[in-house]
Length: 371
Image (cartoon, rainbow, N blue to C red; front, top):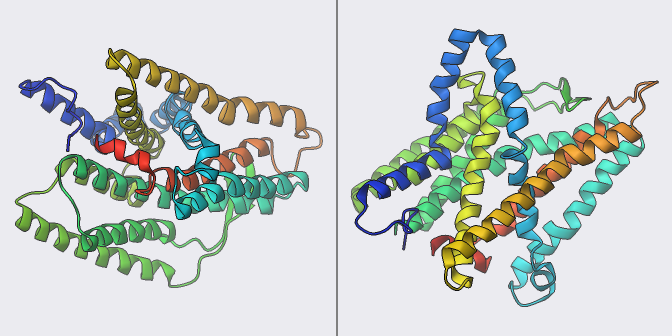
């Protein structure tokens, strides 16, 4: 097994430490730097000015961070699509997941959004948006789980089935706790210019998920303590990536009101780090000498393609469609930017579903993460 510093010449201890620290920042540790910066920004600039400035920066930074992280999923997923769907690349269960997520799911999502847009139904478009908001926490905690397991494996540390179950239980409990605390009684909401009414959550659900989250945290602490005693330590960077993802990006996002503007970018960097690992190792395996130049060229092409596709999906296409097709006088009942909302929801949900296929152990290419 190797780790993130495997490409550094042997004996350069400072470089190894630097690579480990950079990895820590990329998989979630940067949150611990942004938190005090957010506090200082509010203290010295005022809450309103700090929020306005950070929101402005986050909106424009999305072009090179957030949006490409969605777009690169399409570039990874649909590569060699014919072989993956109909050939021998995947075994039958993985091939079925691939076809369902890659072909059936987008058709259903586009049909759902298309019907809502054609009939000018804010209610049906609101249902799609609520599905997106429900699944985003699931997507985040699953990625945090992947950070722990993959980076631990790169360090030669394995989690047995019971330990993995305890970690996953805590991830899912955190996701459900965050979605139900505080309880949503059903209220008017606004997303990307679309007004809708959210689903009312049942009475008592907040208490149930609160208890489940606390219990899962206690079990996880016991499991980690047992592993520490048995193995003589824990993989700290992978564990930090998991806990920061669950606790700060999903559960306690309001620990600072400005943090919510930064979390999507931090999540995207975490994701892109693993894309970089995957493609760097693949390029190095396939390329002849000089492998470094070939790998760099491949990564630059992938990055440029992701930025271009991300702009098209989240800026170019929605702006064009909203400008051409949305009524301004009288005002469309869906609001001024329904195509921005609809296309954004489709891409987000589809991204979650494709990720659940790409990063599975059943995908042979994920073995490159450990190369």
